[in-house]
Length: 77
Image 1 (cartoon, helix red, strand yellow):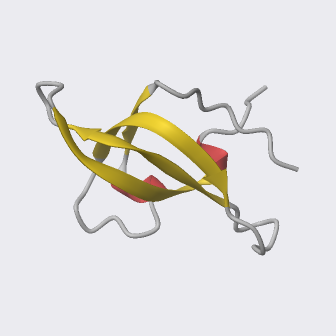
Image 2: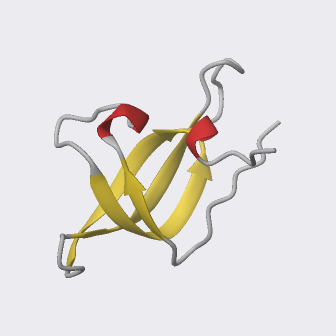
């Protein structure tokens, strides 16, 4: 069962290790949407984080959809 804690409008720093295809390194993203990925085994859960990339100065860049491990944003005890 998913218990994902990602708020729309949040600014997330997503490391390369947390992403499925990390070829361009870490990403800072202003979140505009979150979608669960269906049809995955329970030990391989991913979510799509949608948003706008931000550069180091906070300036907005292009729209992005990034596939991220669900446990990165799961509720922690």
